[in-house]
Image 1 (cartoon, rainbow, N blue to C red):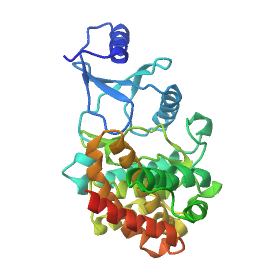
Image 2 (cartoon, one colour; image 1 turned 180 degrees about the vertical axis):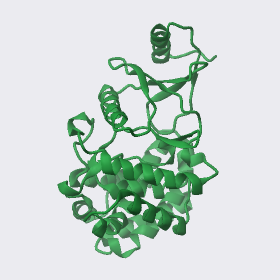
Image 3 (tube, rainbow, N blue to C red; image 1 turned 90 degrees about the horizontal axis):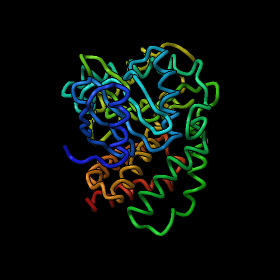
Image 4 (tube, one colour; image 1 turned 60 degrees about the vertical axis):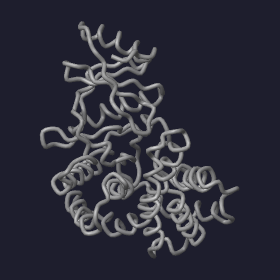
Length: 328
């Protein structure tokens, strides 16, 4: 076994003490986050080590809330919040994004999402989060649109500054995209196939620590547009939207949902592109290949009528897609 660094060695000693057994830790591959997972061989358990205490506390509090709602997630078996150590059920290695049966499992993901949106907000406290209390206009302007302009347009494409007028449009688009308080659900904020596990034909949710009151359409946009992992066809996307509407049930929210989806889909893609660019610049080169297909999809969305009132952001996204295609 490869020698463990100090945090992993401390995690191993803690796990052996808690389980009263000698354990072998096998590190699991990670994507973009700084949290690390290890398989406890022979124990049917994973160990999680997270360096951010505020994030760890959010993960624990929100995870308990979702667990007691009966939502499917790995059971938290033990934890040391001060050191950021957790033991949880091992759900295997098959992510939804890696499944060869999207027609079987994506409808299950839509049903799970609708259930989260129906049930999740009741009894939820915004104080449990570690970032913003809600998905609001200020967050959209800075952590979604602004993140894209900073990380993709300026840092990755090496432009000197945001396009003139982009800040004004970002604020206006953020205000349009933000849900009113009475329309909020408990949004996951990263509901995509890398955060959904398949075990024995069932789906389980991961990485819920970013959940907060917010926009339902954002979560569905995340699931439908997670290029390049699973490039879903337009026809299948439409079927999944209809499945979501049916699974979530009736209500006044249905009248505006498709319009919200048309606005929040490009915003979600901006966030994803920013993350890919930032990770690439940090030396995680595999994410460079994710940029062109995601940017091409963003170009399609910004060309639709929903963003007609934002010509500067539209042209910036289109130009970014052109440059990323050339750069790849």
